[in-house]
Image (cartoon, rainbow, N blue to C red; front, side):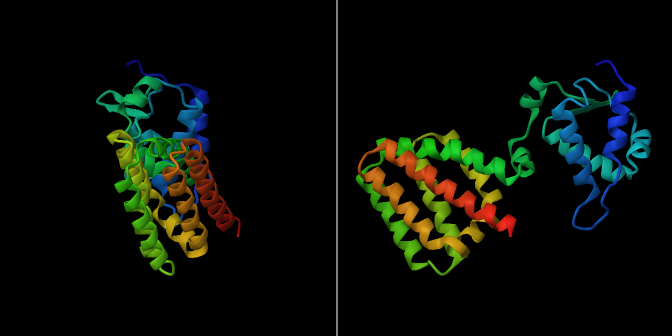
Length: 244
């Protein structure tokens, strides 16, 4: 791969290293990773670009080599760069998608992305579950809702039961890829789930009932609408918390 360095990209790197907020809560490596990621995805740092050597780029960014290496490691997990003996290069989009680590992408995603992912995946899950749920499956879902009723004053217990409820719905689809992707995302959502159940437990349980009611009616359209309403409600609670 040919090394390329241009003044415009060096200026982008200089801006990335400017005004870094030094604090224990915001590690420099994480901030640099986010800024580099945004610049790569926007095209400000183009595919095929070779970063300057470590000494030079640390000087440009005004950071230590350990912070740079941590940032590079995260970018590599995301499939954004490739490190070789000849240098560190920005991947093209094909390489980004083929090399990306799904868990790393989840960890780097913000909550809006996670909610959008859940809308796409779980709405489809609810629709399919309405077509495939057996009487035994429905009894199990009713049992989980009863457990939520009993634990309505315990956000931690409600969060655990909520995980089981949504997992049970995914299992009804018989698609291991759907189940795996959902279960990979949900741990990222745990803190927000605890908050939702501390503020919104009654409504969330009622929303689960609406989903199960649609499944019992074998109404895939109603199941889809009930799941959409449920996830929109969760998003509203989280949004209000961030605005407070």
